[in-house]
Each structure stands twice: as C-alpha cells, then as structure tokens.
Image (cartoon, rainbow, N blue to C red; front, side):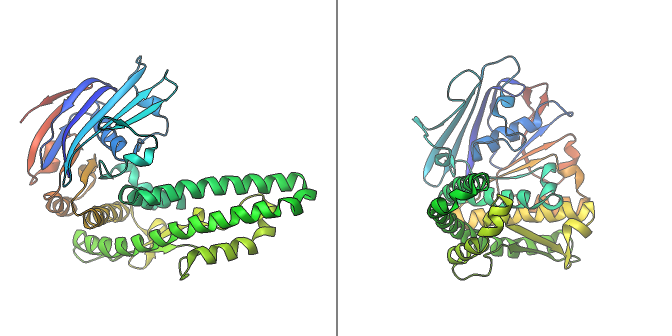
Length: 370
C-alpha cells in the first residue's frame, strides 16, 4: 500500500498543507512543538478514525476554527482509495467519514482503507501500563485487518454495559431479581458469544505475534534477549471459548450481583510479556522495554503484510533518537521495504536510511527540501 497524498485543512496547527510522500521514507524534521507529530496523527486518524493522542476530536481542530479536514489518497492492489474525515464543532454530526464519494454510516467502514502501524514514545505504555493498554494494542491491530472483529468488540461492549446496568438495578431492588433473571441470562449469552469470537481472534493473533516479535527482538539485541508474548484470558485454553465464558458467567453471578459489575469476560484479558523469562513490566529496564515495544510493532507490521498480502505504512514518531546505534541500524534495515513516515529533530538520526523526501516543519508550515 502506498499513500500518494495527504491534505490537511485547519488540522491542529496547519491552516493548509499538501504532502506528496515518497514511496520509501518520508521525513518530517524540525524543532519540537512545530507540528511534526500532527502529520502522523492525521495519518493515524485515517487508519482508525481516531487520534492516538486524545479521545477528544475537537482538540484536532485548529484554534479559532469550526471544522477541520484530513484527506488521504492511497494506491493498493485493488486500486485507488480516498478517505476524507471532516471534524466539526458546530455541526450535529461531529465527525463525518467519506470513502471516495460515499459517506460512511459506521466508523467500521473506514477500516482497511488506510492500514498503518504506528510506533511513538507513548507506546511504552503497552509494557508499563495495565491490561487495558495491552488489550487496546491487540484490538487496534485486529480491527484494521478484520472489520468483523471491530464489530464484535462493539457488540461485546454494548452487552457488557447492559449487563452491568442490570446488575446495578437488581442491587437497588433485590426483590426484582427473579423477574429480571431471564434478561440477565440473555445478556450472559450475548456477552459469551461475542467474547468467544474475540477470544479466538486474540488467541490466534497473539500466537503469531509472539513468534514474529521473538525473531525481531533477537535481531535487535544480537540474540542476547528472548521476548515472549502470551495471551491471558479466562477462556484462553478453552476449545470453545464462548461455552467456557457462559459457564463462568453463570458461576460468577452471585459475586457479580454483590459487586454490581461483571467479573468474567474478555474485557479482563491481558498480554503477558516477558524478556528472558521475566515479566517486562516489572523487571525490564527502560531500554529493554523500548526494544520490546519496537519488536512488537515490527511483528505487527509483518503480520499485517501477511494477512493483507501487501505491506501497511509504518509511522515512526520521534523514536530514532531514543534507540542506540545498533537498534537504530536494525530498524533502518527493516523499514527499507515499506513506505515509512518518520519525525525527528536531527536528520543524523536517520544516517543509513534512504530518505526519499524531507520536509522541514516550522510552526505548521511545510517546506520540502528534496
């Protein structure tokens, strides 16, 4: 997949911008707080319909403006794809997604039209933070590759919200429990069915991801470290995850009623990440954690290419300066075959990489140097 153009209008600190990236590496360089990351954010918005920095879309609109536009054009095996995302402060519809000339009714329709892998400093939270951040990592990967998975996540979240609301209702009026038991049974079944689908996808993806990440990490560390990723779930080992989840939901009902929340389900899943057999979150150094995340991202890139039959784009936001020369060299060797967007403050961080296009960024203005 190749991004042919990126158009910005009133997006973050850009009044207007048109970027025509190179088929290889496109670099955005300049001092901090000039707008380099904003370009990566715009690309990520077209990949998943959301920013990787904020859940508040209105923050993406240029100060003093009422709306913003991001438009990308890509060329893939099946032809040209154009994605436009319009953000508005005043319109009833705050975010409008267009695929070509057609307005998408659901955000899931966007997925796959611009497929990308992002590595940013914030991604260290995959290791450092709690299970929610690791679930988000695997969910974002699978949602881009399998839109059906994205819709399963939405259905599971709705079922979880309804079940939790019902648990609270019964807790307020215990006498109504017999009358509401059938409704609770219904939400148990829906949560189990959706959860089973999610668990099967996660289990398969994590197994493949672990194998690829282990190979990438061995190369990054010259074989000194072994990285492993294991899927942790209440249904991880079950041959039929949906049946196992339903069984556990029924067994946990009394406890759930007491706590007024659902204690069983894929919303409690985690990824157990180890380096040389020790939990990375607890025992790995900052440098080891950064290398582990980079290995996960390189594995994500490989798996996306394997599943789609073509490589996604790679976005590297201010990460080169944080890597030692050996890891930087390994990364440069691996990105040579995919279209890559890089932000940096010093071009020397990319020594050895084929820099097809370099944009100097200053206060929301882009100047192409070559």
